Image (cartoon, rainbow, N blue to C red; front, side):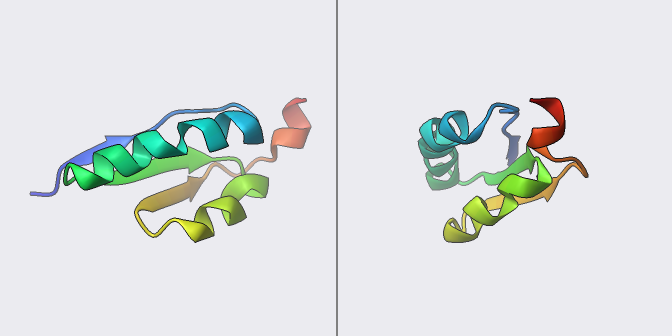
Length: 64
């Protein structure tokens, strides 16, 4: 069974960048890291093969 961590960080881009090292830490501990994200932030996660982004079907702009 794979250990999984879900990171819930509904903030804007700066908050996501600051918390990305947390995902790396859990990945290095053997966890699959799943991160729900707003659609317009999904491309940021393309640079991180250890994070599985899951889009929530909304844009952060619609909540600003």
